[in-house]
Amino acid sequence: MATFRKFKNSFKGNITEDIWINIDHIVTVFESLDADPETNEMKPSVTLFSKEGMNWQVDEPMSEVQKKLI
Image (cartoon, rainbow, N blue to C red):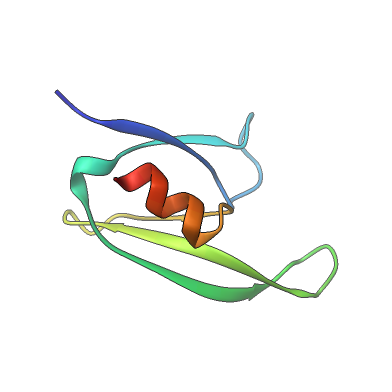
């Protein structure tokens, strides 16, 4: 059975900010700094990569992502 966890999607434009990701397929996670389009300030974001080549950028800090992946 798949193991889904809820994250806050960095992509704006969906009906909600929630994104449910099957963490059984995550192979790499890294944190980077991105410019916030509204404030033009740098903010951290975390990107999750799957073994199928998909990736998702989420707004949770790395420490929170780590908790959700364990």
